[in-house]
Image 1 (cartoon, rainbow, N blue to C red):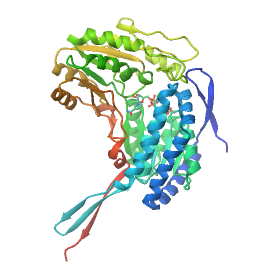
Image 2: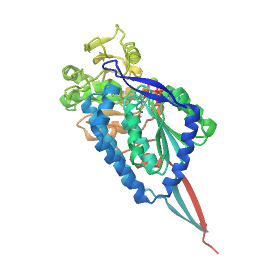
Image 3: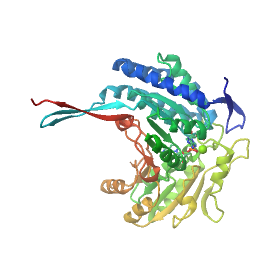
Image 4: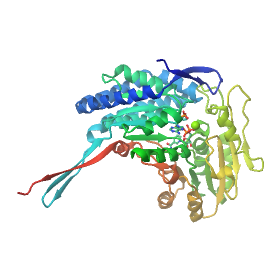
Length: 456
Ligand code: NAP
Ligand code: MG
């Protein structure tokens, strides 16, 4: 039976650039059975062979890097420079977990009458549901550790931007001797995603996307007691103290919020600036923002592409209440393409909708503060807690504030959020569980305790 198809569009040209299959219930049922069979084969392979396979995936990505970057760029509207860097990161992620695979071991616990050992066993078959903003990187942050931990994986990419993940699935299938070990299944989240969540043969779901859908997944997973990792929304704080290198903070700030046209869960969209440095910061921030080049994603000079869809741009525009005070309003071409230039809002109280809700577009809100305690309190007055930055030359303050901010990641004098070697995930409603680093690998395992009686 042939599957129906879903068209895929370029957000820059509004032309159709491909189509993907809409997987039905029957195909998914078969795919999950194939994944179960594949997992049993995979876990029996010698460690070195499993490592070699993950390394081969990395090499294959490198060999097809330009093709994958161009697909991602045209599908998401992502500037080609960024897409190339992301694809290189995907290969690095597989290499990291190839190296980590044989370094996961349990504990030995001596007891009065014997010894217990702990083992990190694979979950079995896992489902990975990804969003449209960083399709291939987010797939890799889950597929690589899940495979490394001994699981088989089904990946469901976002319907808006499935092309790079589908191609990745084909490339992996081309080098795999175990059919079904990694399968890319496409179609609507409400059908394909729900099937994965409801199927008792799947032991874990890793979801990256909106807090709203994440909440529904958490509720639905109760029925089969599925393990879940949720990477959800954010409204991260960028806290700039007057003693910081203001020039450095202000020239870095546009990238911290407008990169990927603001469609970034780690976007530092609330910029708290100590009042005595406010004018100097805003002047430089506006200048640096004005210098960003919006345009054709395939050009190496482009810094910002379009938003992912017309619908999403309408949502973002909905935050730009004319009564807001703007420090900067960039202008974008009409179209074709879902263009939107950066917008910088000044908000004394930080209570506007733009300052509180996740916008997921190129909108930054600058909020002044007068003391360290106030900066921390305001930063924490959010349901989210994913990422953030602190800019200061005072080392003790940097550590004090970093510890006090309720957020999974904080960078000092930097915009850094995601490194393959370090855990990444949210406090509060930004999610649960961690991806990346060794934590990310352990998240794809079940802990087993084996007791051996030794007394006689
Ligand atoms: P979304 O609507 O929640 O969709 C994410 C994924 O879930 C897509 O593959 C989607 O499929 C699927 N989905 C939708 N409804 C579903 C359901 N009822 N059951 C199962 N799966 C379902 O999010 P988005 O609009 O793509 O992405 C934007 C959001 O993701 C933002 O809030 C952002 O902060 C968050 N995000 C978080 C991180 C992080 O690491 N914390 C990273 C990136 C993005 P369809 O595409 O078919 O609808
Ligand atoms: Mg969506």
